[in-house]
Structures are given as structure tokens and as C-alpha cells.
Length: 222
Picture (cartoon, rainbow, N blue to C red):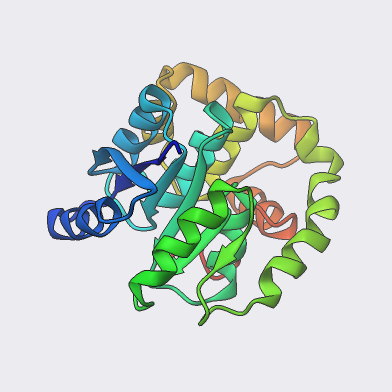
């Protein structure tokens, strides 16, 4: 039986070591790589093509949620489990909307991590027992409404990437670094986004992002 290949992403060595020990004790799991920040996580997911990426929600350079979004766009077959200290629905909903199938609280028993990895590997959703299980149902019911937002769907894939980074509070230069494109290109995409959505400033853009569910209202400035 082939093992589930896993990428561990966390900026704390002690956490990575603990997770590696836990996972390698499992007969059906194998750790194929580690990453210490969000950008490295995306790069390693692209190069290693693990079955599952176990990603900390809070990492330097690029958050776990932003990394998840980029991974799912580049290598959609990689399934993601988010490790988080946040129980609020807004964080869980955002993780799901960016493509994660699993959301595990750091305060949960280690068995939750193992169950989550096995579940998402089979294409199933998994939430820690402390997280409201109705979130998945609500998310699935709302997903069609979110995907049908006509204005957002007018944006190209790259424009959508720039849009998400900007409304999450990234500076133009940061967005350029994350997407490996020039500052001039980001500015051009931003202008196109504003024109297509008939929006004239960042405040309006953020309000629009909250309205269509790209970000949660409690996450802006969090």
C-alpha cells in the first residue's frame, strides 16, 4: 500500500519535529518535506507534489491561508489541512473557501491531525471536534452563491490573485514578490480590477471582498 506523502509547514522547528515524529510513526504516512514560511510552502508544494500539505495558519512572508490559495491554484491535487489556534467561523470559512479540506485546532488531540490527513487524502472534509460542524454545510450551501458573483468572475485568474492579496492588506510590492511579477504589472492588474468592478479606492474594494465572501469582516486588520 502506498503511503500518504505529507508536506509539513510551520515556522517553529519544535512543532515541525513533533509533527514529523507523529506522522512517521504511522504505517500509512510519510513526510516528504518541510517548509518554514508561506512562500517556501508554495514552492515545495509545487516541486514535491505531496498528497497532503499540513499548514500552520500563521507563518512569515505569506500566511497559511494565502499559501493554501496559491497551492490550490497551482497544484489542485494537493489537499490541505490547516493547523490553527482560531475557532472563529470566519477563519474556518476562509480556509475552506481557499481550498483547504481540513481545519484542525492546535489545542485538539493529535488523533485529530491523523484523522484529518486521512480524510482529506480521500477528498473528504474534516474539522476539529471543537469547531462548529455546521460550518461545512453552510459553506457548501453558500459556495454556489459566492462563485456566481458576476463582477469577480470578470477578473482573470491573475487579477483574482492580485485582488485577494490586496484586500488581505498586502502592499503592492509584497503582492509582486508573492506572485513573482513586477511592481508595474501589479499596478496594471490593480487598475484593471478597479475598472472592471467599477470601484475607485481600497476601502470600497475591501467592502466588496467582504460582501462576496473573499474575506471575513473580522479578518480585516486582524
